[in-house]
Image 1 (tube, one colour):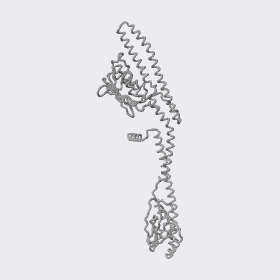
Image 2 (cartoon, one colour):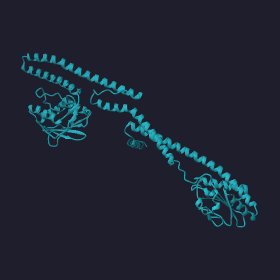
Image 3 (cartoon, one colour):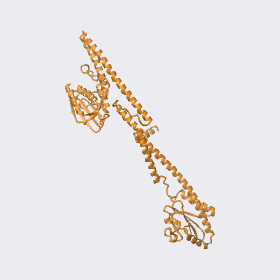
Image 4 (cartoon, rainbow, N blue to C red):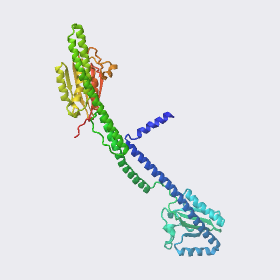
Length: 495
């Protein structure tokens, strides 16, 4: 049961809109539709109930009128019945059509359901109670199929002198009630009259066309007004989400405008306060590291001078090596702080030109860099990105003397691949090299330099640009570094 609930919960999450605005609109649509459908269903049930009450009253009135007509004709002698019928027809405009036929006329009975049963039962019960008649035929006919008189003439074929009879005014959806009962001696009394309620036998359509139109108008109006209100309420949340994404890349993003509803404005104010605290902490950290590195340089210099005064050459060399290592750690910590400092304006940068300058610098140090491919300019923070690429390229030429950089530009991202000719890195240590002060090459000392911070700084700078950096051992030889920078990135230049 718990697994089934989890399954349906996952399915529900798939169909729900991902945005808060979309979920609000979905709730409004479902709520309005549900309320309207429920109200229409209740209103239709009430209307149906009222219709049946009116139909019951009409049926009762018709039943007693038919009973009076039957009682009247049953009381007449046989020879006077046709005279009374002729007088009735000459009057014109009468509500009932009455005739005495020599047989029961066929009727194409229409209608079904509780409405018809109500009328039929009411007529039979009244005739049984008032006249003691059980053998009565109660049926309903359409005007175009109704037959009259013993000759079974259609209503539409009646002579012109019948033109004023109310039966001829019937509409196509207005049923005609036909009551036939035997009078004896092969005579049948035939009574036909219009039902005052047209369309009682038509199927019930509780959601008719006009109701559907009204429902759509209400739905569109509510959704339109709700969309405007929700957009106003969630605009600040959208800005906050974008600002939170930018904040992970750049602490100097402009603060949010603290507007909108009270709860949203409070959240925006809290976000701005958090951003100010983060900026203050980063600035304090930079100042602290700068002060520490500056203060440590003086005693290191004094110790180096005193080491030169030692008489024992071996002790002097060991003491100088320890001081060099300490100085390397101090400079590495300061470089780490500078590498994490992203206080720089983004500008469109041609990646090939930057790599060409780095190749020239590496060539002076004995490294060989080959550049392959072309890329369109990308908005970046040039000094920070140059530092990241320099760290990666220096690492490549240090281990392999030669490196190749290939550019793969696309509409969504720029990819750089750096492949060296070095020994590579064991697979289980590929992620460790990004950690601070990790040096996989034990020979790197004061003679080779390095503090184990370069790759970590490079990773931070690339992630600050919204990109990713990954390592893998190349199938041919050496280490392959893959850098992915989004296009456009978080530092896209407007205009």
